[in-house]
Length: 169
Ligand code: S3P
Image 1 (cartoon, rainbow, N blue to C red):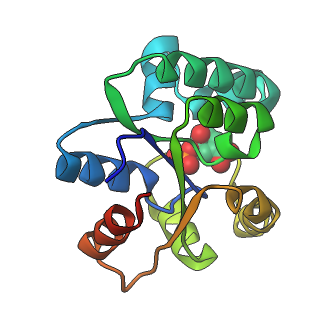
Image 2: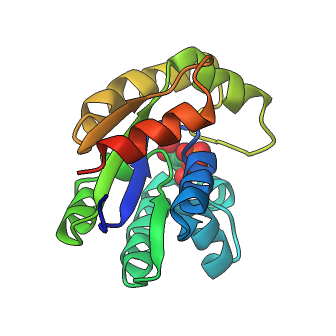
């Protein structure tokens, strides 16, 4: 099994945070969510930053937070925010650290149900149409991740974890 750090990528609602936590539990290591790290270090959540300062400012904050997070060697599993992997500078940071990037590829409908019914605010997915356009336009970037793991309504967490673990290079 790999001793490389793992970075989970994928659209909002694909399950990055939960999979990161469960994977870290299985591998007996620590996980962190980039959005949570931003909230803790900036005192505002990504949603609050996007609404107050705009997406461009948020992306700069996000890149600098990712850079800081990657300097912490004890963090073995990182869940990115849904847009982070679409930014080339962030992909370079992850690749330069030789992290294993894994795309959790969930169908749009599953993501949308979670976005729509979740408590977590997502200003970049305000309605179904906008979310779907963003989902489609980001797939080519997500496909640049080293591994792709399918997520579906039927697929249990233990199957997802088993697949990730067995496919780790
Ligand atoms: C975003 C996804 C969010 C958060 C921010 C922007 C995006 O994270 O980083 O609202 O651009 O897809 P989640 O993927 O955890 O919802």
